[in-house]
Length: 291
Image 1 (cartoon, rainbow, N blue to C red):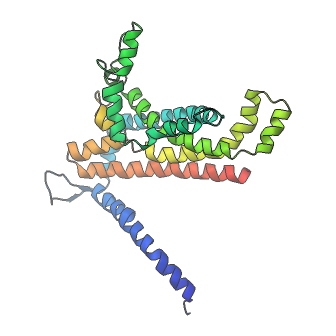
Image 2: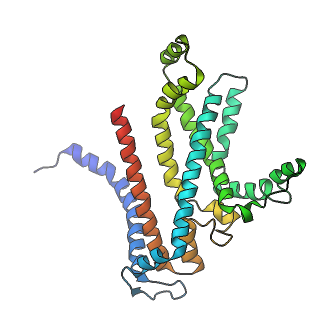
């Protein structure tokens, strides 16, 4: 059967992207799975020993894994709640007409464009430092004892830093959704005398449902692999109180030189991320079908 010219053109046009996808994703994933089935230490380059699922069993039985998994879930869940709740509130404020609205929107979105390492250092040295940080200065001004954030509240500190960086993203998506609200629907609600709370619950919130779902899905993917903020502030400590899965895998590979064990952890993290992503994608599809 002869292949049509249109199909040949289509295959030729999509082939580069398929090849790039294979090189960029499939090959590294295949190498990670291969390493996870072997005992391979960086201190012994060239020495591979097939151990099957031993690395997976070791990783899953390690008490540090459950602690890192819990920290990851707490981090992701807390940041999602903060960014969605405050993102809706800030989007509602920025959607109101006022003088300097454009400048306010730019300032509200700007933290998202700061690199994770830079934002971590800003919070560590300028805001949360117990001696010279702005928060400590404000607490001293109120005759309060400054908080040693990264020693007493390490995971909370990471949550605040990450939420500060991702809040502008949520605000931008939700503000865009608010601006697409039907003006006739808004005027009808005002003519009927709808009060602010019912108006928000029955008109604004249902309209934002799809945008909130998109925010949760996109943020979830990136929050599962938070690393830079932890690296430049707490280094996973004290102990392992602020260690998530991504940082645990880093320590296993580059601090303990166990590439096999780290690869097993990476595969487990990928599986968990895909399970969550599939669940959220189906949730989005269900919401779209209902609409």
